[in-house]
Amino acid sequence: MTSRVLVVGGGITGGVLALALAQRGVQVVIAELRNGLGGVGHGITLQGNALKAFHAVGIYDELAEHGFAFDKLRMFRADGVQLMEMPAPPMGGDAVPPTMGALRADLADILARRVREAGVDVRLGTTVTAIDDRGDHVLATLTDGATETFDLIVGADGIRSTVRRMIGIEARPKPVGMGIWRVVAERPAAMDSSGVYYGGPKYKAGYTPISETLCYAFLLEENLDRSYVGEHPNGKILKEHGQGYGGVWGQVRDSLADDAVVNYQYIESILLDGPWHRGRTIVIGDAAHACPPLIAQGAAMCAEDAVVLAEMLTSGDPIDEVLPAFHARRMPRVKLVLDNSLQLAEWEIHPDTPGADPGRVMGQTLHAMCAPA
Image (cartoon, rainbow, N blue to C red; front, side, top):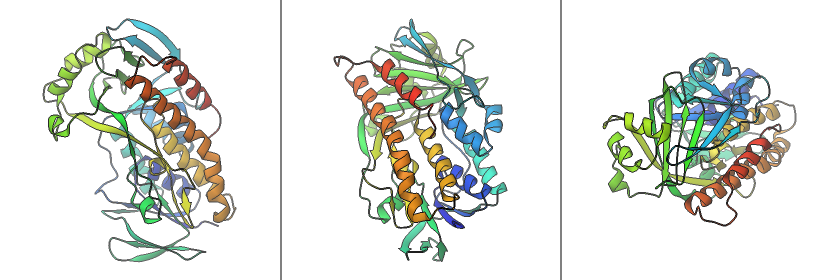
């Protein structure tokens, strides 16, 4: 029986896992290096399978009070002329909408409060510095110098996972070949679903409504020199780079103040080829499989990992059977998402590729997500 688990990382993966385990009677410690679990950041597109995972741990209803639900994706030419409308499949079943936009901060704040209410021991400014696997248990030394005993350590510490390195998995993130601008702005009244714009001067532009008043807009282009972007990119530079796009996206761009807070980052990916565990330590979420945001499935894959692992750990099966079974169950699904996301990225970088059909690949991927996680 799994009775005590250390979760390293308190983001979406770690928060959902800790909450799911605590709800099943497991004693959970979260070690989070930041000084808080609460959220900052831009908007996020949550497909139905992500919402299904949030529903499973009881946070969906509260998130829905803040977010914006919709059931389609529209594709446009760069000038704003609509090319097609693609219904979003019911990836989460009947209990949740096909898609929802939300603020990352709202999601993180809800998770942070719920894990504490569930009795999770949250250690801030803390991480693991040493792991000693003893076969029937595992010892973790934390940054305060204390060594504690756990049945399992879970590395949910992101694409640059410390836990992954500590257990001898040397895989490193790979650049995808593009960067992404993100900004939260006022939502135009005409924006009632996600939209993406193809054929412009950059790789792609798009947006998602995230509340009744706000939206999240993005722009994909080549990797830019950090010295050019600066430490704190703003609305002025995004408006310059976003010229050449019309329609609702152009309205969002033009509404930005020059000093609007903008995020820019290189897009990277990782997928561990072999097992995700060593002994009684496992990495999940972005620590095991981080995908480009081309299909908006990153958060969904992380949340699914967390819910599925919690279910399997509390099934009564031995941990040494659960961990490989978990990998076997999750790997085909996350590999499909990652491979297809990378294919879409390649087509966006090289749009004249013969046979390129992003709508087909996106649709096939999302329909595949209707199957159970």
